[in-house]
Image (cartoon, rainbow, N blue to C red; front, top):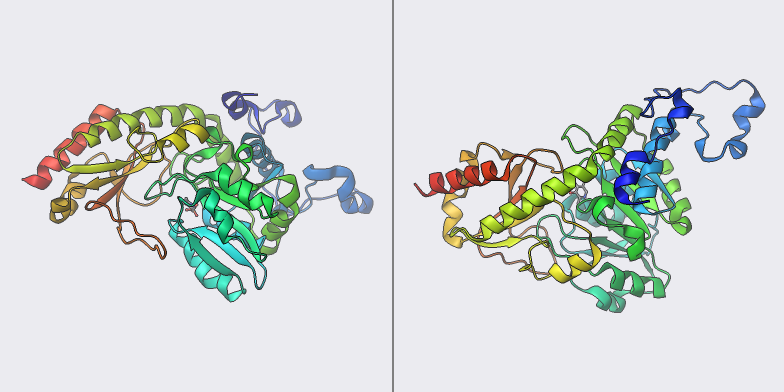
Amino acid sequence: MKNDTLLVHAGRDPQAHRGMVNTPVYRTSTVIFPTLASYEDRKKQGDKFVRYGRHGTPTTYAFEEAMARLEGGHKSRVVPNGLAAVVASLTAFARPGGHLLVPDNVYTPARRFCEGRLASWGVRTEFYDPHLGARIAERLTADTIAVYCESPGSQTFEVQDIPAIAAAAHARGIPVIADNTWATPYFLRPFELGIDVSIHAATKYIGGHSDLMLGVITAGASHWDAVHRAVDDLGYSVSPDDCYQGLRGLRTLGVRLRQQMENALALARWLQAQPEVAGVNYPALETHPDHALWRRDFSGAASLFSVELRPDFAPRLEKLVDSLRLFGIGSSWGGYESLINVVKAGGSRSVTKWAPAGPVLRLHVGMEDPQDLMDDLRRGFAAASA
Ligand SMILES: *Cc1c(COP(=O)(O)O)cnc(C)c1O
């Protein structure tokens, strides 16, 4: 089945729910069983067994099933947010003396978890150049517990050569974890590229409406038990209402992403032509250094990219951002509305340098008419220069 069809049909079974098109919200902590034997009989009921709310309800399972099918993995677990997915995926493989490889441009709270709590558990994190590709082989040791990837980086947008990294890691039996939030399963099928554990901040495009915190971990069959166990041990559970919203977001993910990609490309191309702009970091642009990798592995691009302004623009940056009317100033992305934020050039890198031409803005392009968004930016540039 193609992605668009899966988005509509995965994770729902109307006849199992009195004909309801959508899997209803089952709110519960406790489930009542008719007999003691049926309470104990987990095996017979398999994956759909519902014994206690923390483990999930039919709403949870519907969302998990839809995500696993979209990702092309064995099974999925829903967790409270994207960071919880990062934490659970790393906890699944953590052991004292373990060595973990993490890209230097990684989402900052993930870096903090590695440098803090994982270190206290005896795991040594080595940060690597996201462009290392097959040369990751030189960094693998007998103690390497996993290679973590995030492609593209969510502020600087380097694309990683995931198949090359996976080939090197798998040659030594090491699993590859990837944060697939930017692409979503709609634009990147992680297990086809060799990823063993895929994580998402479903808070972003999957929720799609800036009103949901949600995360998902999907694993291949050989790593499922480790991931499943980690989520249980961490005590995560997710409200069935939020799982319902996750499922609801999936139904329109394709149309939203296609439109937002079109809008983002129009804006990125327009920005490239502006005198205030030194460069646009968006892998979907032919001028991006990783464009060929992106074209090979992704079937589309999310609507999040960054823009490097000319260095002399620095004193006017705040005026530009404050004068915009359609771009909200705020964290997160993936909703239907446009957002803008400032990227700190130094970031939190430790082994690679990123030296942008000047101040950097990150834009999330929503579903507004791109002409209106361009007009807003044009007005902003004019106001900043006045
Ligand atoms: C936002 C984000 C996360 C964390 O997701 P939350 O739901 O905000 O916890 C993880 N990874 C990436 C790449 C993100 O952008």
